[in-house]
Image 1 (spheres, rainbow, N blue to C red):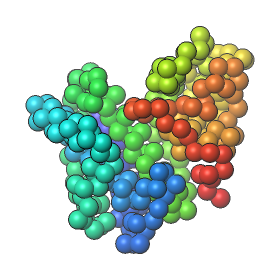
Image 2: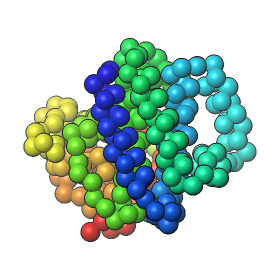
Image 3: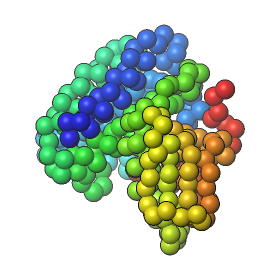
Length: 264
């Protein structure tokens, strides 16, 4: 758990270092992720990091907080708006400082937990290991939105393996979430990591498969890129999966249209 949390902290810190250097104008740039700004992205991460800290330290307080959030959702408010209201009076630099303070506390607490410890969350409880991995995916995905709106590229790391794993294990979820029949065969996944190694999941198949760059796959399953804008190769059941792949919880969401989120 400590090793995973060290990687989680690295993911947080990399993004924090980026946003802490942004200008006031950059904090308000409009991205192609539902029109969110970098301020919206970090507000979203901070909102759930604060709830994650509650879940890991005070389950009763988390349940009470969830009840209050649910009341707002029932009234038709969106989570993004709720998060924006929580921190809307802050300048971007102050938001970044509050976020760093929070995620440092969260990672430190998670590192002390048994990987199998159960944490309350929205929906089913999660193991501490799964929770930490899910936070890494969220930070990486929302971080991509910020890199994109700034027109910058980031250097991929082997932390992508954790995100790719979530992508693979949510194959069935993608279809169930859309009330579609789940293909009988799970595609074999073979990805080339940033370190040159090959990462494999599932049973080898020359018919049902996905192969290619790990970063491309992670961009697709987090719906930050249309699969047509990547160099991924795939066949069989993967042809049904990748155009709608969704590794995050929530109602069905659609990837960007081809060519919309390509950074030259």
